[in-house]
Image 1 (cartoon, rainbow over the protein chains, first blue to last red):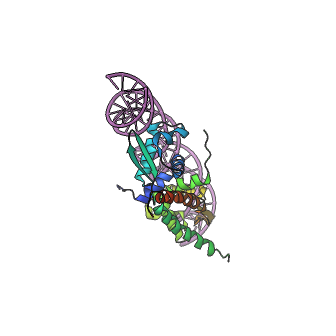
Image 2: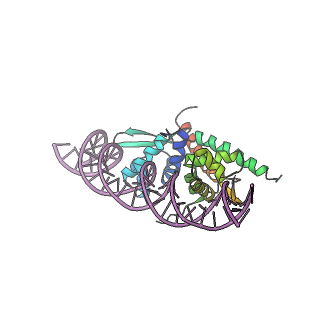
Image 3: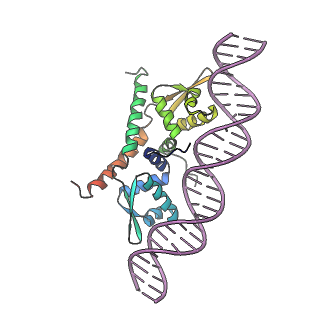
Length: 103
Length: 103
DNA sequence: CTTAAACTGAACCATTTGGTTCAGTATTGT
DNA sequence: ACAATACTGAACCAAATGGTTCAGTTTAAG
């Protein structure tokens, strides 16, 4: 089974790592370079670059080479797919709750 | 660094696996046993049991031993934590969009 | 021109993950 | 009582993951 990965697949997989979620939070405050993202974690540039690549392939961030630096930005509409998945399941969870008898 | 895992950590990690997300969808349709969950994947009971354990430790499902079977249910309020995390980040993504000049 | 900064690609490595089989235990059906 | 069902725990395994270092390349600064 070759199993090609869907966008939702990649998004959830990308979000599974705490470092990557922290990167997203950091990018919420504005764009940053690989160096700037790596520094607070005391991580190598190469290591951070790989995280950013995962986020990029999951369509959660967009990057662009600017001079010798790479500018990373939070992607617009980044969380649409997984938000919809979550909302759907959340409704089911609420149904479970309701049919449990509680008013 | 011992890094004890937060609930949000566990939830996102649990959701990263497609099989586990499928299990959650299945449980959205109502409770099921380990055997019933394993069958559509052609997976061993042991394998499915481990997935269910992960979901349980992430507070996404609740299980209960009933006779020789184990009844698995979608947890109420399962997705509260990650929904809030997502909503916060989603607002940032929208800000990025807005300051991009559009409107 | 020369150096330093910022990234990149390749290779490597330890740990985690997602599965398996095998050998039980506990419940249920005949 | 006996056999079948349903799960469980231990041990094992291959592949994926999250990092590293080292050796470049490209761009910016002096």
